[in-house]
Each structure stands twice: as structure tokens, then as C-alpha cells.
Length: 75
Image (cartoon, one colour):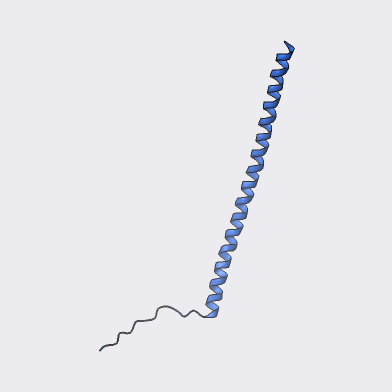
């Protein structure tokens, strides 16, 4: 019976390598959290701009209706 030896290409995972992997994963998640923070900031700014626009449209509509009512009452 012949014994076949399979070469070991993989390195062993020692504590230092696991610590390096943990740090790499932590760095990746940190970058992701920073990106999400930026996206939330952009969404918040857009939300504020839309609310200002909605307020201006609502005010314009009220002023228009008041003008129509004033014109009807004046006649």
C-alpha cells in the first residue's frame, strides 16, 4: 500500500494571524459605519430641503386661496 503525501500549502492560524484578521475585519466595519453615517447625513439634508419646499408650497397655496376668497367677497 502506497502512502500519498499531500503538500500543505496553507499556513497555520496562530494567535497573531487571528489578531490581524480581526483587525482587518474591524477596519472594514469601521469604514462601512463611516459610509453609512455619510449617507444618513445626506438623507437628513435632503429631508430638510424637502420639508422647506413643502412649507413654501403650502404657504403659496394658502395665500392663493385667500386671494380667491378676497376677490369673491369684494364683488
